[in-house]
Length: 147
Length: 83
Image (cartoon, rainbow over all chains, first blue to last red; front, side):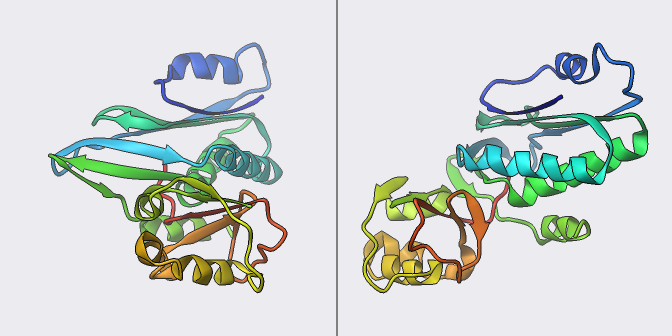
């Protein structure tokens, strides 16, 4: 079963994994990636903005593509929006499969696409000043290897 | 047609959403960028360097040569930075 959610609230990883893999006996591997706000260089907070509608569509299409590439039993993607302070969880990607290779590869694929295609933008607050985070070439390089 | 702006593009143009009637001769994303830039003020600033912009037509990423003449929704934003 797949779940894609964009939300302000925090998420409970254990509860999400129970939903993803609970009650079935064909799951042999669950891989989770959790992104946190890294509090480097006096970061006060990040505020995440997104494009409602397109975000969900874009993520759903990448989940669909992951399912074409690997035998997955389920995917859960949760991305938070709004103002988040250092240490807060931002994103969860969890992939379930009968075997670990598919779960690992699909989680990495989905994170690479999430970072470079899903319409989210981060604005940083440092002290009293705000600035938009610039996209990184290394993230674009990471997604290119899946082509 | 609905135009949407996100992140610093939104801040520079001063609104997140507006309705426009497409002027004659505006066929592609590139044409629309040139038209919006010609409005001056915050628009000229936001659209000064199209290489810094990304565009979605009806919620799909597109390049600047994509058609907009039959689109319902066109969005302008910087390269994405989620995850």
